[in-house]
Image (cartoon, rainbow, N blue to C red; front, side, top):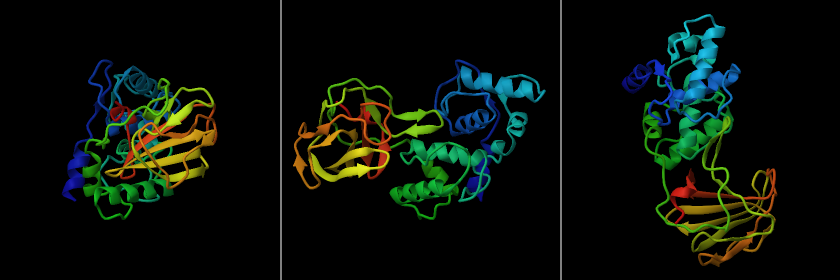
Length: 283
């Protein structure tokens, strides 16, 4: 259990001073999950130290009649109840567990390209399934348990596409890749009108073309090297499964099918199944 002990020992008081280094931290994300549950933080679970998180900590401390020092230390975590413990790495995270460490693992999985639903600190079936998918992707035993080896690998930089791709639609990007509220947005949304033409981001062959509950009318193109691009919420599909396209070949048209509040193109780039930031691939 040496790995777990080292990780647990790394959980020190988090200084949440505005202007501190803005690097995503799973411990800060776990804190934000707890603060959201207490109703003192309404921002996204993004793992970034910032004014909104610091304000949430101060509000929680004042409510609990604790010194309002802006430091998320042991007293703050006690005020969060079960969402404030145990430390990340103090135990393996497995199905049925809940707490600070589970929230941190949920954030780490999303950042690695395997979102598991809402960041809520509860290890339900979606978390276990995402863990197994990540472990298989990383070449680890796919047991659905986040022990020292899995936690160590989850700490690595997120994957990026090895291929350069082109924009699939002539439109600006609205919502980006990353945290959005208590969930993780696994692609980017192009703000385009209904019916706007959608084209292949690169040469490849269609591996899926049809309906999906959340994505609506969806096309998936395999480009080689484990890279796939996903085109969701289409109003029309013009490229059936099995068709191979050149870059710029017609895929379909922008729509609002599936879980969409209005017309736009939801676009994803995945590497061997891991969601990556499409903006890092687009040229």
